[in-house]
Image (cartoon, rainbow, N blue to C red):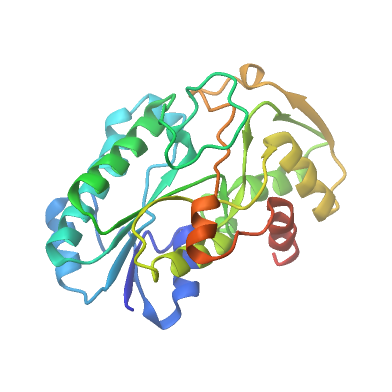
Length: 282
């Protein structure tokens, strides 16, 4: 099953191409501009893809507050263009979304299911939610996948990720302060890619949460990273308000993966095991 991977040079795109092997059709930004409907149409009409997976996105959460139009074009208009062409060609479209479509429910303590009402807190989450709506509106043959806190080996040479950033900073500094009031589930792109490849073979279309299992805070994730990497650094817990980011993050955005487990017959590894495996294989 020939599968076009848009955003193939990114962390998830790289691992998707590895998981797909010879079936992958790797498309980078130089190959297709998803915000340009003509570019999307020409590119997809010129390849023989049976499925299209879109991992391309605008992920600069804080900067999105200052340039929401740029975020909307990449995260909403782009997926709309892809969904429309996939519908014309009658091929399935898999689109990556985010846990940041949630966050507006005060004092949330239980993982979100696919049926929970979204409530994004900032421009980034709003743009990603709009992308979801566009995809569902334009093609029935869709997989909308919500995930969280991605890290993959391609991040070592690309735009980085939280794990790589902590390893670098922990090696450079004597002490670090990390937010300890945001609960989420960091997810290894290798685990996510494998699950996506399994899911697109089921023809069980719809919206899915896909993350590693369990939940943690960024502070506890950092502590785990330093433990596994054997880095000795003083770690201080701070609040989101103390950190003072430009964009408001969800304080709780853990996703329930039961629907995925029922569909592909398994759950992803626990986040602790995934982080340890990632660091040991660097």
